[in-house]
Image (spheres, rainbow, N blue to C red):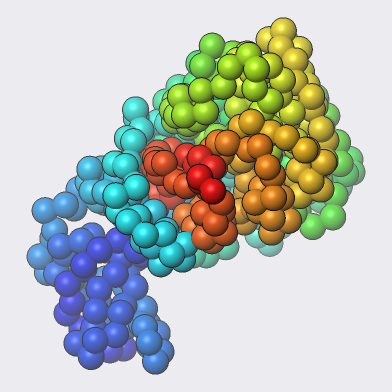
Length: 441
């Protein structure tokens, strides 16, 4: 296999670091740190780029740090534990700047993007982890996926997860593995563990297709392994497991969800509902959006892709009226509960954002927090055609699709500020809030 000595120049927009071969080609290298001088083995070379892996670190970068996790080099959950946190923040900001300039054609992108807001915790910030379950021969294996592989690692802990449940993977793996490898039971697909940051609630969710299941035995084993679990549910999936289409949620023990507090509001979250994995970071998102929109008792506000109500509730406490649009059934049910338990009102519309946005004739302010795929073209077109809309807060987890949408939205709206927020330390992912006002015509 061909080897070559290179300098690692920067972190890429995905998990790999970037350097150049002697022939000038860009090469992508996992686990590289900017400033490293390394010997790499080249595994793939095409006309415009190459890929390789580090065979030997000749001179380590001053930015290189010791990973906290024993499984870091194998596990696919983290990318950047070996890079100093200050540099991670700079790299995330730069990824947003680059996407806006290159994809969004946004002029002066570097001036618009503020410093990346640091997470309050570099580790133990996640409120949710998922363990995969694979049948290997006659036995059931439970763990995290290896880096760029479908194989599993039998982690004993996860240092990104809530500290009081950091060792939950080891606690659950052995007992559930032996219970659920019985071929007469519906197969276990994965295990979700969600632990609230601001309350003591913790839920274990077992994802399976419909079929026979040892409910009582599973509850007994989980309660022995995790005595602090306040809820145990079984989530029945239909169709392709990767699509995560929920057929039914069976409450096996406890609350049937967790209670979380955020920005002074109380949220009920069922296992299938989306919730930001970093609750402290989510508080920053909400505060950033509210400060900019500055809604008052005369405003009509729309929250698109509302989820369980992260933004809907604080908006409903300030605006004259709020409409929340969400297409996912479990999230709609949680949203209605959350409004009721906080004694708030918003019109909850269980429908597709692209279809529903066209029905509004006048909106004063809007929040959009779409999935990684960004906004549907019909949503972008509707926002461009709305006459009275003055302010938009666009919350995104994908700089590329965000930049694509901004290229169109900036035809009618001016970007006031772009705020990267680090909800995902030790990974290449970044959340971004873009604050826009209607341009003067």
